[in-house]
Length: 105
Image (tube, rainbow, N blue to C red; front, side):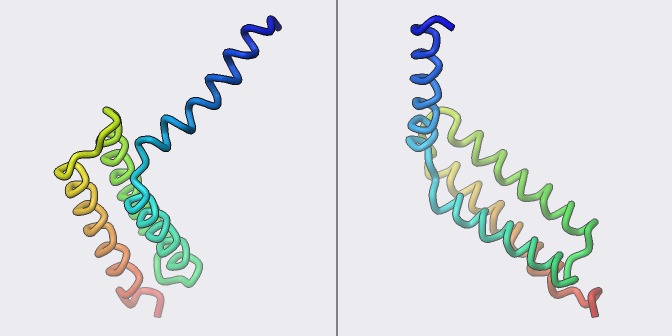
């Protein structure tokens, strides 16, 4: 391969993480991680069925899509952040409901 092509590929691959970091929403990302862990733990402990787990994961994907749309222009506005956090609140309630709905007992 041509050295200039290799250089461009390397430079491009280094620029992507920096761009992503610039749009970072650490609080939202951290909460998403914790909610994913809660779902996994609920499945492992038999509190959440596989079907419920798939539904909850789909809800997590919805929240991630909202976050991605908010970050698309490089700036997350207060309204966009509020919308994502409200979706996370609903997800959290659903996780709580499924983990404590008595089906595993």
